[in-house]
Image: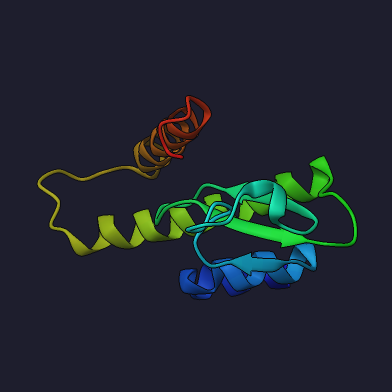
Length: 123
């Protein structure tokens, strides 16, 4: 819960929080930096989609587990929800939006992001 609170308080902390959760290193520009093939990277690489673009993490010791991946993805979704909520509060509303509708809009945004990255368009 402490890590989730950290991300909710400051979404810029997402990469560092996920790295702490996974005991991993944040890769600055993804696994295929200029002149470096993926096979040359030590350990395993995990890609987490975020509202600001994909984040990549590397760890030498052992592969990332499905549970670790799921937790990291949930933190990224939390950051996105916090950012979307801030955006909806900043713009003037022409009609009153219920919490139920706002939740639905956020769910649609998250689903669209998942489909975007699943289909390979976000890579």
